[in-house]
Length: 533
Image (cartoon, rainbow, N blue to C red; front, top):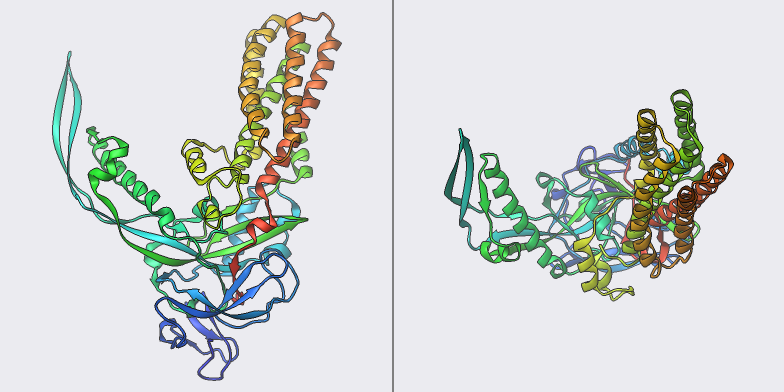
């Protein structure tokens, strides 16, 4: 579609200059100055679409190309192209971050992830970043009742008296855009939201020239899917901005109930715009599962799901354990009951992390945070309504929990060491401490077992019960107050082995959470990538 007026060669969008550039003669020009193909219209335009035979992904491109491999699944089958209609967006943010800058940002990002597999750090892998324009819905919001009056109050201490003041607070609500919402059913909503925001100042009128040399994902989620959420979101933000503004003056604002706020403000959608935002996309594949890294092509913000390397994790854990053991050997004479109680505490904490990983796996497998998934009638164990109810309740710990584990274990070790140094730790005190550990373990085990009943992997039940069995065995021994130290040490070893089973299971769950089945994620759209560095 984009031929050089000078030599007839192919032109691509050069990020560094923000202009169309010929790859042969070097001529460049402003993107809006290039005449669009006459097949373009207000509703759509003709584009080359390529179908991956391996994963079913459709790759849109404004320039024809014989795509040799699929950037989504890594399939090496040649993809045949044909013309197809592409829904024309209203606006676009062109790529601002070059491929080199994207790779440099990822290298800095990966430094702080010590447990990831080595191949995720290799230069060959990093070179496979692909530029994709992702579709988003942008809502412009307005308020039918912009002039609002609220009751306010403040209190001030004056000697032995408290002076109460009341106010009538007049506020003007201004129109504002809401956050963008993912318009592709194949791009997970929770993941798409992690790379926002994009800069408003970089938005410009859409021209297909910006797509020259990049992929484009198609919009197949209707804007109505997010309309209610957008109204609620901007209403909540408006209310918070009001309360925060008066809080600086130590004035409390009486707001209407949260379920009445939108009606009180008269919040409504003034306009909706389909927009394309730039995203650098990288895929990691192992057997039948994939993980991906996305980089905001405008701001450089990174969102990723990275699997954990067993070798790196075990090595780091052993190093930390050696440091902790060395410190405790220097300053503390640990008794047999103390060692058992310490191992029970660590196992209980591992069960805590295991529980929250189970929550996230449950949400991922049932697409709780991906509204677009339900639009195409895809199968799920729950309805969209059930997913929305869970979404409102859920608090997430995050995939990086495993990285915090050794740090947390060190903190626990230090606290226990301080307790030992201050008070000593006879069997009686170890027994008392175990009465705190066991209820905490139960608090995590019961919800985990409930979630495991609906999980696809039944090993979850075994890994949970093994960890709790180790804690229970130690609790019984402390309760009976055995007289021989070897009994405590044997129970300590068994408890640590039980913890190892739980921790290894936890890493497996994190890796499962960080990866996705290929058919689910890669049934999507994209395009060509020839961006020059």
